Length: 464
Image 1 (tube, rainbow, N blue to C red):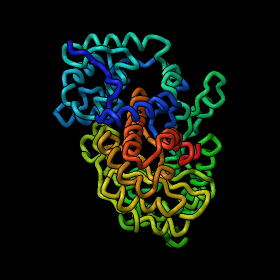
Image 2: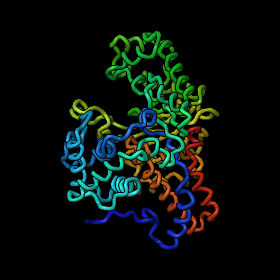
Image 3: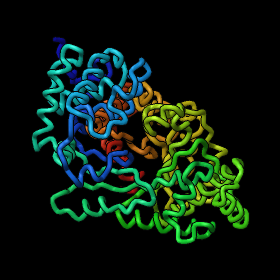
Image 4: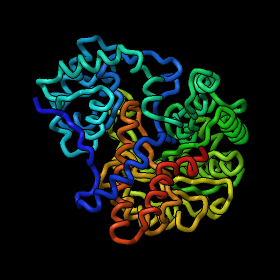
């Protein structure tokens, strides 16, 4: 059977002299703790600390990167365990066989790199996934999952995670976070992230019910805003450091109080027009920035995604199945009202992400190159891949240097992929800095200091 091996110099530069420096830089940060300031692993996973059920539900079904490419090649989501709450052992094994049989589809993709690193470094797999190795590799992973050292908390420690941020609805009581923080047997930090998107979109189904769930006076604009402020305070009290926002655009346009009240009441009654709903959302995003200057929550923006592009798939399987697709974006004028008001405020951190890489050097880096509050978010979703990360690094560094960067963001629901993704980022940073050294644009001691700062930069950008 073809062996599965991880080359020690993977992703490092090919030139021998540059690679030698990159090796030293990578070795200096290889084992530093992981700071994960934005992701989708749930706090209850670590609180309950139950054994993972099976290899497929751990490594395949929750990873929309894996599902997306398989689906694109004709594999139905039902064959990947989607929509099955408690798969049988036979069903789980069949999902694994499906992945292994189609493994050549992942050649040349970062998904293959992450997944192979998981198999080798976590589970000791030595054979490449294939139809012939499917059952043996399944059995090996399944046997590991029966051992106490493969339970969630043990892996959290093994992965070297210092901080893990979750993504949470404003109505969440955050009881799991409180219990983890109070547990003397758990030393990690698991922080909630305030995600109010559905509360800012009155045109979306379920908006009124969501507002009713958090506000004492839900029919009034003032009551709604007060409720959002109180829920943010609840998150801060439970260790939250950031609020995350993802809308189709970034326009922030203020309404006067009377107009905001009128539209809120119309939306609550179900009579607001589409244009009014959009205007209200753009006003509320500006209000979120105002709140961040008051409560200190970092404002992270993940815009420009058409969520759930294929409605029949959404209706059948629910969200987060790999069909959130990028849109072209504009930042400079869209954010001007927000930055005119708050861009110089000492308590605002505004982290700008994008899936439209045309704006890296044209808009995001220049904004971060003037406004003290603005940070450049790491490549995300379709762009958190080696070549895209290299393009991003080249596009933004000459404008903002290294001090205004968010640090790597894994943005994952697949718990076991976290160390592989952060390792990828550290290798790429080592290669970039090594190239600067061999071109005599950076001294070697500066490169060593910089790569450590890059690993630690989420601490600064996300106020960790």
